Figure 1 (cartoon, rainbow, N blue to C red):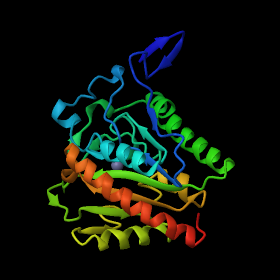
Figure 2 (figure 1 turned 180 degrees about the vertical axis):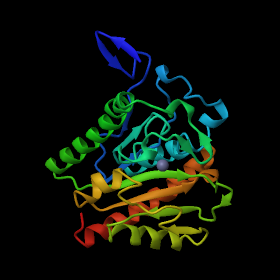
Figure 3 (figure 1 turned 135 degrees about the vertical axis):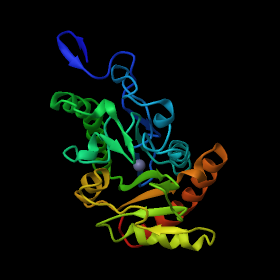
Figure 4 (figure 1 turned 90 degrees about the vertical axis):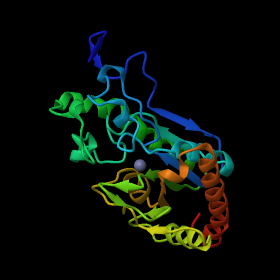
Length: 265
Ligand SMILES: [Zn+2]
């Protein structure tokens, strides 16, 4: 760990801040989050004991979602917040007390840089990456509420086409738990596209143990929400990212008046 002014730190002067925001003045009711946007590693942690080929694959980040999220934010005029460090450093969509928060193994890869991590080192990852990200999401939602702007939280993710040897058929999935309003509308719109295999809580469902952003920021505050998971091979180049951003922008623009008509926003 670095030591400056007697204070031990994780992120040094060469490391970028964990949070980046796009279109912060956007007036859309949709507020976009991207927990697994980046795959940076704080300089002091080196490569976590992994070769480059591991640090660029899906265990480190949500491949392709960055481009989709940025373009969707622009097209919807929606505020987007992203977290730029790898989920192998600390997973910003896991409760900090669960084992997969700082994974010792991901899929079949041993993360040697996380093995035997001290409580102090784990607390530092939380204090410098996880906490600022979630504190900022809280502040944004509070500020929107104060400004009279409704918030519909959309948590953007991507999933690997093959996990542990099993191929996944879905092009896109909605993920949800307690919200009964938005996911059915998103599912209906996606199915109406006609060319998609749509996952209903596939390849994952939201739960309190495996998720953080939706349970803590949306469900606990009673906000309408959904998770979106796009298969990574569909957004592996700029053309794919654009076509999925276009499609989702069109779908969410169609859903907004439906939510307003039901007085949900
Ligand atoms: Zn993700």
